[in-house]
Length: 299
Image (cartoon, rainbow, N blue to C red; front, side, top):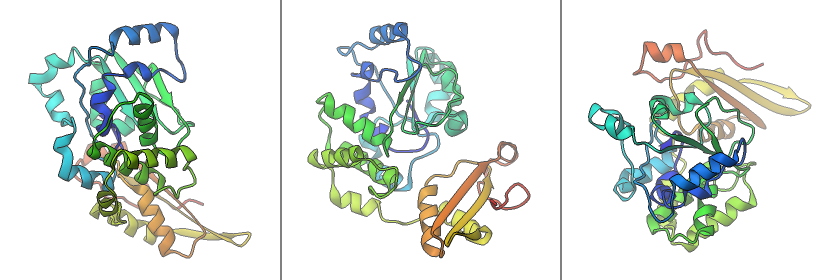
């Protein structure tokens, strides 16, 4: 399975193989697809399932995984795509894309799509348009975190989760909802977070790993943001905007934007980052955001 931004699918990936029929399509669904999926995934015959993080995870989740990755079925993308593994990929039944609906979000994991018999997208951005034509199954729900969707399905299926899994799900909810403070947060996110606590999520680990500390990459972005911010007052409200470009995906922009808002005198802060594929092909080693000719302040 392939995760491009975060976080939660690590905790439940080995469970998904036992209950993949629960991940029925919520849009563009076809009856024959449901029948085929049900036949492919017999709850009594779980399939080997792995998680790939081609673009890493949210910093708080990444810090937790750095200490506990051995507890989860995580594989490197290289181990799946090296020549010795290509034969196994021919038997790849399903790829699940979590919190990602566009090709530029899955990056180097895109070749996996060509091997999979089925591609399922699990996301919480209901207004996003997908350009992944291989995907036939969509699980889209209007909640603040994909972790909430995973938690709800595990709860409803009465699947027991470990303390580490509960903690990772809780971290996913915290990171995607700003600890339940973002406007996109729903009551379901709070209920799901409470459920992870009931299942033994470590509050000490959550407190340690959700501390608002920016990575070196995020600090570079914040520096460019503060240097290139354009502010204007509209009906007494200070609105700050900035548009930057980068040659690669950068995790945790919500934290960067929150810090920029706190450091400025703005009431509203809009930050946008454009991924420049041409620059990416010319330089794979440099992901520093730029504010040069390909970047400009929003007006």
